[in-house]
Structures are given as C-alpha cells and as structure tokens.
Image (cartoon, rainbow, N blue to C red; front, side):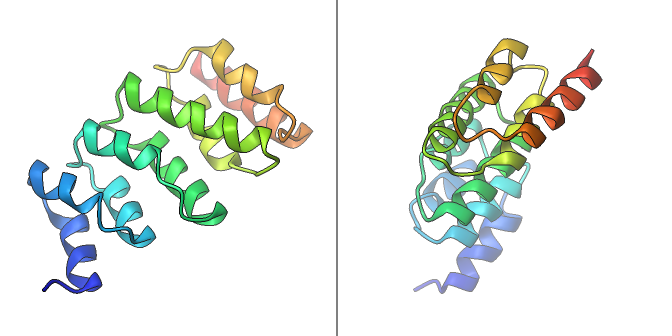
Length: 137
C-alpha cells in the first residue's frame, strides 16, 4: 500500500496522466499542491483540484498554484476565478491567487477587476491587481 510519501513523490515526478488524475482523490493537501506544481498534470485533473476544500491556507495556496500552472486552460482558470470570488466574498484572502489570475492573459481584464470589487478585496490587493494588469498590456 503506498504511503503518503510515495503519493507525494508520484505527484511531483509522474508524467502519466492517468496516475496524476488518480492522485487527485488521495485527499492530502500536500499531494494536491504537488499535483498543481507538476507541469505534466493534465487540465482535467487541475479542474478537479480547483474544487478541493481542505482549509483556508491550503486552499489559497492550491488556487495560486493552479492559476500559475502552465497547462491551466480557460476552463481551469474559470474554475479558479469562481473559487477565488467565493473566498473573497466570504472574507478570506486568496490574494496570491488573485494576482496570479491577473497575470494570465487568458482571463479577461474585466473579470479580474470584478474580483477587486468584492467584499474581501483590500485596497492593497486592488493596487497589486492594477499593477499586474498594467504589465499585461
């Protein structure tokens, strides 16, 4: 039976899409994050991870990693955007994920700006978003 360490090693190193998809069901935050850092993780597995809830800190880190993932397509980024909006509305602070989304040209500028209008968005976050969005031009 694989140990958590075995699963973490597989999440970090595997290039097998089926194995990476199977690892999304492990239920360990550090495995989820390793999958989000692995550039070989396919978009459908990333999409599954966008819906994971394992605690504010872990969720916010995972969302940031997903927003930065080179294989994140429009569907994945849309799911991350929705999760970030949900967290901001709830008063959480997924600020790194918000800034990562702002840096993605696939995400429309108006959708990013809408995040800055949510209850949990601070003035500092809005300034950071403006800075990142200005760099996209």
